[in-house]
Image 1 (cartoon, helix red, strand yellow):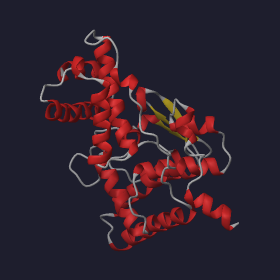
Image 2 (cartoon, rainbow, N blue to C red; image 1 turned 45 degrees about the horizontal axis):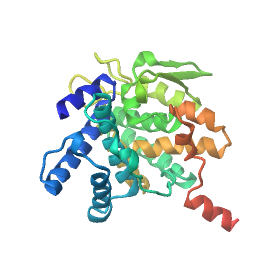
Image 3 (cartoon, rainbow, N blue to C red; image 1 turned 90 degrees about the vertical axis):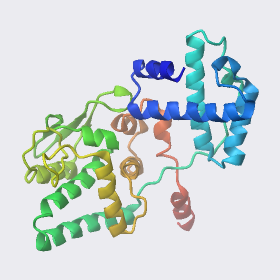
Length: 300
C-alpha cells in the first residue's frame, strides 16, 4: 500500500521532501492504528472515530502544536483521497473530522535592529578574514554575498542552491534571477535590486572555476561542487551567533524580505508574485502584525 501511494505521489510530481513527509505521517498513523486497534492499517478500516482519537492522541499525549497536528491530518487526507480515487473506499472519513482551530502566528522576521546587527556581523567577518585569513577570504566573500542575495530576493533555500549562472541577468542598472523550479515546479523571475546585484558581482569576481554551473559553489572541497542546503544553514547559523540572533535560518531571511516590502506598503499581490505564492492567503500572514508591531503601536 505504501509503495503504491509513493508511486502516486511521484506521478503527481510532488517534491522529494513533500513525499517524505506524507509517507512519514501515514506510517506514524499506521503504527498508532495497529497498536490501538490491533489490526493492520487499510483505508477501508479507517473510521472518523479513529481519526478523532488520533487527533486527540497527537494533542494530549504527544503535546504537538496545532500546526503540526493539522499538517499530519492533511497528510492523511491526501492518502485517503488517493484511496477514494483508486476505488479502495467510497468516501474520505476525514471529511467528517474537524481540524484544530488555531491562531495563526506571524512568522519570525528580523526587525531593523537585527538586520543592522546581521549586516555588521557580515561586514566585520569580511574585514577580519581579509586581514588575518587571506586563504579563507574567498569563502567569506561568498558567504557575505549569499546572505545579502537571500535577504534581497526572498528565495527559498532550495531555490537559492538551485540557481545557476545562466539564471542570472545583471547590469549596472537592473537585473533578475530566474527561478526555474519553484515550489510546485513553477517558474518565476525575481528582479535583483542594487544590493543583490552588487552581492552577485562581488562573488563572481572571486568565484573559482568549476565544472558545475551553480551560482553558489563550495570553495574548500575538491571539485567546487554546488553549495548544499546544509552548508547554507551552517553559514546562517554562524552569522546568527556573531550577530546575537538565535535560530537564523533561510526562512527567516525570506520572511524578512516579505516584511520589509509590506512595511513599505507594497501590495500583497506583488509580494505574492515575488515569493512564488499561488494563494494570496499564504502571503497575508506577512501583513498581519506581530507582537512587536502591537507593542510599538501602543508605545507610540
